[in-house]
Every structure is written in C-alpha cells, then in structure tokens.
Image 1 (cartoon, rainbow, N blue to C red):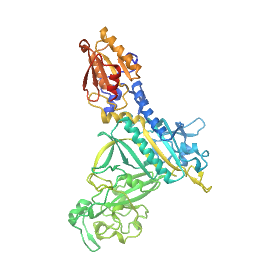
Image 2: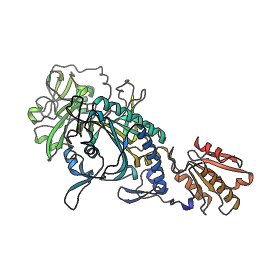
Image 3: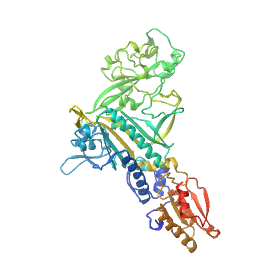
Length: 573
C-alpha cells in the first residue's frame, strides 16, 4: 500500500489523560480513536494489527479441534438470573429493556449463552467432548474506564467453552488449552508467564492466567527464583514459614494487657515474635437481598489477610466490607481484643475462619473478647470443628510451595485466562447428557478467554521505547520504503520498483510517497512501529540504500544489487 492512500496519521501532541505509553502511542500513531468513555474505534493500522492477532488465535484454536461460533452480543437476562450471576456480577453488568419490557444484558462473557445453545443438541456422552469458541465484542460497564484499550468498557475477546462427560476429560482439555495459549503468545512474540489465579466472578474449581510481563501491569505476580512457580497474588500459596526459635511457652491463662490493642504493641509487651499472635480481621459480608452478616478471619500477627481469599471463602457472598470500630463495639467486641474463645456464642455467626497454617497450632496469644485482656498458652488443637481456609496474602520473601525457594514479586498484564468450571453453569441451567448407563448428568465445563484488544497495549507496554511503538511479531507492515526526497525522480523510480517487486513476493510493504520532510517520515516510522524502514535517499548516488531495524534502530547498508528476495529474507529473520 502507498502511504498517500492509507488513512493513517500522527500527532505530536500528548493526548489528555494518557498515563500509559501504550495509550499515548496508539492514539498519536493513529491506531485508535476514542468515541466515548471507554469506547474506541480501530483505525486501519489498529485493524491490521488486530487482524494479525485474530488470525494467529484462530489458527491455533482450529488446530486444537475447537469449532468457531458467533453468539449474540445481547443476552436475555433470564439466563443470568438462572445461573445466579445476575446480582453477583454487580454494576459492571449493563442491562436494558426492549419495547416489550423484556430485560437484556450486553454480554461481558457468555457461559450462560453457550450452555443454553448446546442444551438439547448434545444428548449423549458419545457426542463429547466439544469445544466451541468465538471472537466477538464484549461490554463491561467499568466504573472508571482508563488506560485506553487496557481497561475499556467495550472490548474484543476470544472466548471458548468446552463440554465434557468427566472431570478427567475436562483436565485433559484444560491442559490442551494451556498449551494452545502458549503457542498463541509465543507466535505473537511476547514475554509471558502462566500463573495460578483466582476464578473471580466466572466461578469454578481452578484457573490459570496468562500474564505479559510489564512494570506498568496492574496485577502483582508472585514468582519463584528457583523454579517455574508463578501465581497471581490473589491466588498464590507458600510453604509453611519456619517457626521462630523463641517459642513463648506458657500455661493457658487470661492476662491483663491494658491498652495493648494491636499486634505491634502486643509483640513488644510480651517480647515475642508476632508469628505467635493470633490476629483477628473482622468484616461484614453482603448477600443477595442486602442480607448482612458479620465474619471473622484469624491469621498470624505477622501475616496480612487477602481480601480476595477471604471473599472466596464465603459461599454466595456478593461483597465483603470492613467493619467500623463502632460496629464492632455494638456487638459486644473490642478492636484488638477479639479471639476465638466463645466468639460464636457472642456474635451468633457461622462465618468464622482460620488460616490453613494455623491448624492445630499451639503456644499462641489471642484476644480474650474482653477489653484489655488476652489469653496466653492458646492451643487450637483443643478446639472442635474449626473452619480452615487459605486466607493469607503471599509476600516477597515467603517460600515457594513447589521447591521452597525464595518467592519474589513482579508485575504483569492479564491477556488470557482459563477456567475449570465443573457444573457451575450446567447445573442451574439444567444442561444434561446421558452417560454410559443411560442416566442424566450435568456437563463438566471449561472456559478459556483471551482479551484480544487488550493484547495491543500490552505488547507496547512490554516492548515500546521512548520514540514509539514496537510490535514484536505483529507489526502493521513488515517494511516501509521511505523516499527521502519525493521530488527526486531517481529516488522515486527506484523506490517504486522495489515496492512493486516486494509486493510480488507477498511482502507486507508500505511505500511512503508523501510529500513531506524526511524527518517527519522517520518520526512516523518510529512512532507507528513498522518493523523495518528501507531508506531511498542520498546514498543512492553511491549505489547504496539503508535498512533500519525498528527494535533497536540499527542500520545495514545494502548495495543497489541486493535483490528484493534478499531484502525480504533479511526482514523475515
């Protein structure tokens, strides 16, 4: 294509409210245009990159045996009500009524739709497994859209859904999709990690995220220095901590601790490591119908509660909120003095949880549920029916659960997520098949998503430099031929000949035939991020041309005798 015929433009001005370089370059380079809050149009350059990414994804998904479909962007709310996700998803779910007062949503994800679509068609285990995928627009009504395509309200996704007759077959497909995603992101050419993850509003028994590593990433990732363990901080686990040597041995007793109402004061008061302090974090949980219950989470004094893990520990919870000091006092408790002894009788709550690492632990100190008093010599092994959960937020310096190596943190951008759904959706939507014995069973399901439009800014956050975009394996054009002086007939004729020769070899080539300064053309090459630039300029009189690689702006001098095929081979390396 000739640049003069391409709807592409660049601007020098920094767009307003651009925090990330990807947002800046996508707008300034003419890739996208904002038309509303969190809503963007893809202009020709953006569409080319988008199409390349879609092509890679489609090829790998088809190779895996999945079938492509297109599901309705508009979904009857009735399906979401049946799955009990309508209220749980929250205000990000955009709803509307048609002229007949029927309630609909703009789909942010399509578990309900796909389950309803196959219901009645897949009747026997002999028709399984089945994996259906689509590449389609989604909508999530973000409260504060930001960072351009990174957190937009309207976005493009590849979402796939698989159906199985057994958990074992679901595990097989889950592993296949993990490898398929690895193939996709390797072909796109990004540095990524596969991390253990929280299932969030999607639900299910297990999930993994695919993270592009970038310091601007919103997600904190825990990784091991010694092995391949990686996890989102919301789902990370660790090996048990090493017990400090100075164990506070004491007979069980109530101890007067005036105004000692936090971990630091208590640790100093008893001259002990906070490892031996049983800390309570009080919350309130909101259920459907605005029903409010109080809940209490016990962890070690040296640890912090993971709000995500705490939320996930409570079935059917819609929201978890902090309890104020006044609310705690109103139920007969005191901040800094809450402990497990008699707690259930005081608050009449079933939502009392202990971190897994506290199981049967001894030599602890905890609140006595009485102002200015703590218990010493606490032995949790003497309690009956305690509810243990993984509650602790993992930090740098903790020990790897796989190899006990040192864990550290980095940041990443989520571009893919795979889930084991089990019968989370097939059961409420009554989607069944007949097993080998002729009995009805609910489908075992999996869900596999890729945020396609999010990949564009993610690539730039990882690869772009101070001059502009760098696209890895998916640049809009492999090479741009830059005519230094459009009025020079020799430069024009030679550039046009190479352009036509490269086109005949099916190269992705752009001829910059615009009547503007050479410096402006080079600036656009750097900003827009074409893979190579072939400079036809003053060196032509010395029988030379220059090839510039965008990724590092290194230059190669080529003779005029260099064949177009040799040039193409160079840029394909």
